[in-house]
Image 1 (tube, rainbow, N blue to C red):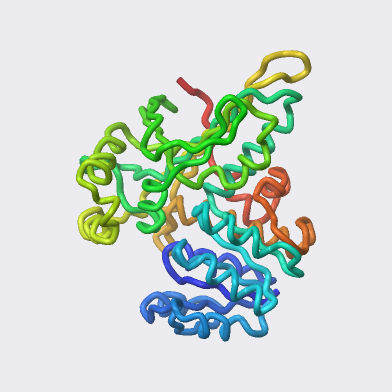
Image 2 (cartoon, helix red, strand yellow):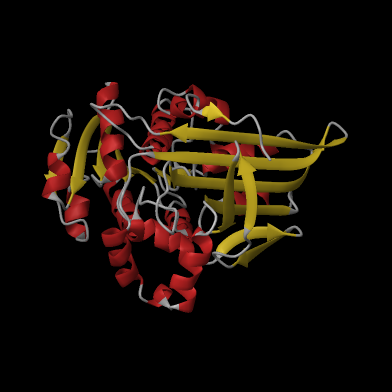
Length: 364
């Protein structure tokens, strides 16, 4: 299968490695950075230096390929998807942006190719897990989805290190969040809904952020009373971000905030991804609860270290592409994440990265 991968950043490099080394994909990687493309020199991939903000250049580099895998910043999602449709390419991305996803859904109507956005960790894997658990219940009461990409060794006041896109991070902190309350689809404010819990003896906080639910609100409306998604952080993080964004007004000056974060908050490869889903409702005549709790750790190999967010995000989108290639998923139109069966994903050669994680045994 011939794939053009848009973006050679932190996640894109891992996607390129997984697909190109599998033996089933011919991969060309497109980016606007010479440095990023040079980092792929050890892989069996072709590279192309392209102005990714230029529609014509994007369209031209898709010619002759079967699929586009988009790992560019979220604000380019609709542009790339539109060009993929014009080129007759199947489309997969990692966006968490709600507006972009809705526009891509409209773009997919009547299309002869596949459009599958939100193929990462959250949205993405978390939606697959939640939907899988929900199928066990005849009457759904509550679905709670919690995900965190956290430094293994927090040292600053934010108790945070940069582990993925700063653009995506600020986007999810600033936009309204979808939820279901009392059976009705609604919007809630980001950074609100603070809760605290412990897992494996570590204390965490969780609060509303945008995009993590994917399309689950549409899928489960009319079936569930309460559905929400919250981002997990170490205690104190939410209060500082609320002060920066809301009290100091930096939600209206996001570019400066991103610059500050990139300069002041170091990146880390030593991270951990936490996935925590609880579903409750009627099951075989009893009020029951099902829990899925995992921690996925970084690969600290000296020759090829990978962060946990690289592993989980790249594994999820590569598994989606692979399941499509194998014919397990629909071959045209819009594909929701929850159309992927969790057993299929975990059995996939890429999705198995989630099987290698450690299941959390105790929750407090």
